[in-house]
Length: 242
Image (cartoon, rainbow, N blue to C red):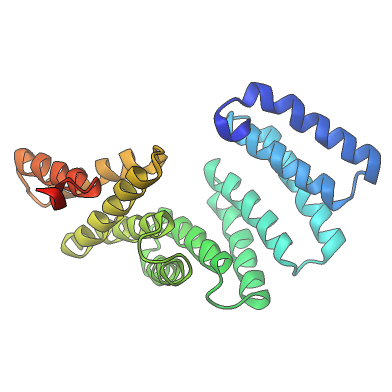
């Protein structure tokens, strides 16, 4: 229910699951940490960030005590907490957690594992937000390469990583480099949306980003509209059927 935008129904079920596991296994069991993470995610989605932070910190402490400080599950807990800190405008607190999560992932997994790519992407985005572009760019490029190798060139995750890199290039005034990446990112999501029949939440944002980039490149509005419309037709296969 949490994933179907029914948080009011999901919350009592998640709280009940947490209470049952605490009573069955004790307050420091990994099943409790899992429940805490699930409930914290719902609280984040409903903008109760202070409450979510308390749960994420407790889940992290349980994972560290149960598995040791260098376990991949600890990296996930670190990442969850770091993202919340980033969302609450505390990047200085988030950065060391993200770096530690990345170090754990790189030490415990293959260098091209998707989890390593996720940590690279998150740290790269944080550094971009801190205007440390030279540090962020190689991380975002590596994250994109891992996503392509792991999921294939047309996976929505690749689209998201392309957009992240394109936004950095745009912010550093490399519009001609950003444009093909942002175009490809939008094309991937439009096609995935058509194939699956599901609306992808990033598609509208990517189209808006792309339109703004083309406007910054001095494209006339009518040309932008026609170009995006052609991309939408191509994503549905209309361009091939003509």
